[in-house]
Image (cartoon, rainbow, N blue to C red; front, top):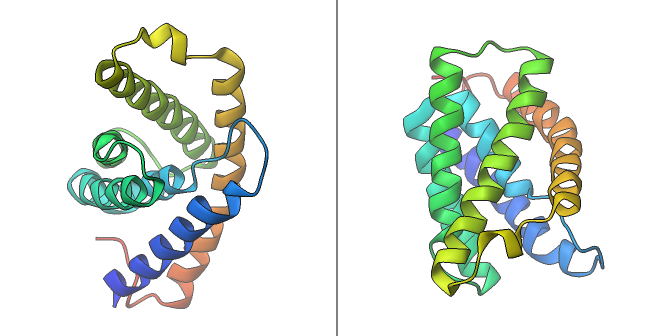
Length: 165
């Protein structure tokens, strides 16, 4: 049942990410799927976080018609890293969650930009923009403020089906 609920959450976030933001004319969009990967990594640990990140990233790659595999790799790294750190070093607090979202978003952006730069052969500094990074971090933090409590409420509603491992 837990896997089913997580699949529904991934599907909803995937549809919002790939459809709704195509109608918004901003240069930067929040990465809902990254925030979901961060949450799932925090809840399930490094191994499951990497698995969720790989699946979420692959689905995003397939639906975005870009280079297949780049989001898969970057999101699996983020899911693993967040899950590993949550298991061994971090504690569950609001400030820790804020810092985790900000650092993981920056980590994902740098990984993604690095892979794109290697694939297409241009300098990473051409792809990095301070304004874009700050806007992305702000948007992802706003998404986390909404998404984390929503999924926590689902955990309380379905405690037997969505419980922490």
